[in-house]
Image (cartoon, rainbow, N blue to C red; front, top):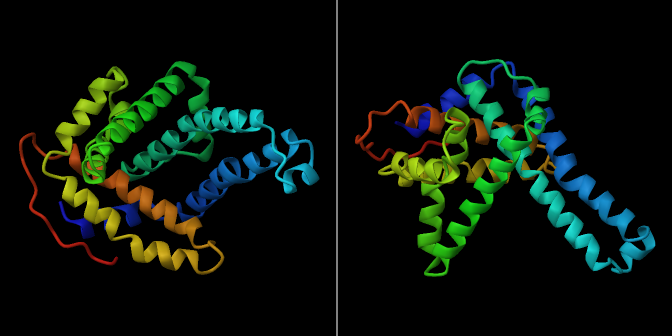
Length: 227
């Protein structure tokens, strides 16, 4: 598994979908950032109260609930790009249909929160163990896409098995995007409309290659490229 091949596969999967990926990124930005700000202004009693930092405590509880409700959306975005990598033709509307299945949505929320708790607990020892465990759990949400019959703990355990011998490769894959992230931020963050699809598609391609590797096989470490 070479990082250059993973990123190449991601670019190929985005051929003809760059505009759709940019639109999806923009929509998620509106839902994740703009709408919460509007909600905070309204629930604070108006713009003047909000500017005067007179936000009631109840507003923060509402924002907390809102952020939790967005978890299924984030998961659906990952699955959208996984479908692209697998040469399927998902539409943006498919991302939002995850809320049609409330049991699935609750399961994604449980999985995300449980992974977060595990990472925090490991981080109480030292930061590095927490980061390593974060890499170990990184494939959990993808696994639940392929194996909806798994429980959350089963998916987390399977992710740990899949990532055995590949955590360093996953780290280097993420590290290889630092330059792109900096460049994307220069033109008023507009570049992120294209950077985010490329990044998530690459993570999805990583998982797709990971599940194709025979069990017990460890990959050799390849130096990332700047593609």
